[in-house]
Image: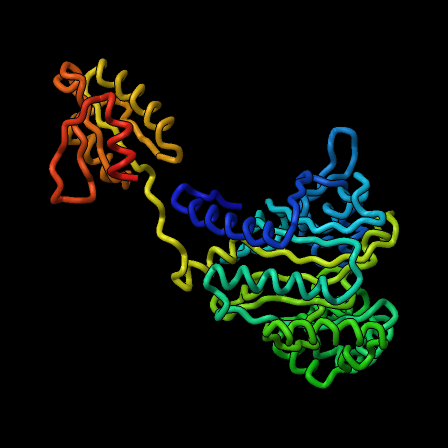
Length: 416
């Protein structure tokens, strides 16, 4: 778990603002829910034999003896919040949220034990059109961030529960012949969650999987039609994609559409956005049957990608105006003038020197702040009811003496 320092937060704010803007243009509303949930929520939704539940959750007992867990992902919490607050039955919802998630796994670059996600969830829509909308929304975000060329959309259908049950048996039958060659994790999953073996990173197991049965051959007609409908919409919208028959996602609640946006620019941590359809989850958690589809994107990885591709914006200046003052009377006048400027010029970032110091040291601070203009107040200036105004970015301009009452108008007209 790490700190996000003042040198880093401008990039986070830029990315979060872009995401908010795109989501609002598609008609999505923000929802917020607690970081802590009852442990049972995640066991019921994610699956008790998943790596997340078995190995990675931060779980503890509170003073009442209740088992609580720091949320490892957001979808289950979103479903719980919507169901408890009556947002799902016979309603359509387009929602999004952002915040920290927690998983106890080996920290890597772009993958920390406290990580941040933006999640997008939709409820009440059954067709492939909403699946396509989510992918189009994410594709638009990549374009506006300038990272489209570095991302690949991988797509698959894992069918309905019956399709997966038949495929699961075929996969187990096939892999059982190679038990002595499977890696330790895959051997463990063979009896509990065999579809997760498709996601293995072990080279030997991946080689064995090349001749394994393919899930697409076990899809029922409804699942096949849904997936064909999604592909037709993406084709019509000009969104390129790669069919990946081994893409299954790591959470038990997914069915039908699953997708990932991946990159080869970040080494092993190549997935920056992933999601799919989870039509059975609301009912599984005690609600009424509700179709649903969503995705989540990792903020850390997106920031890392922006930096790697050198498309991150330059760090903005701290201030537009810096007020230099010398002497107690001038310091008091500076405080008042700063407030006047903030009122007169909405949006102006006005920084005043605090803590004293010589004119020379204060001008160093002014320059470091990135301000466009400095206003200088000293005893001589105050005695004449004027201030010195100096451009910090135009070396050819000369310092001007301006009457204090005219400062807001002069600064607003000249520098904004």
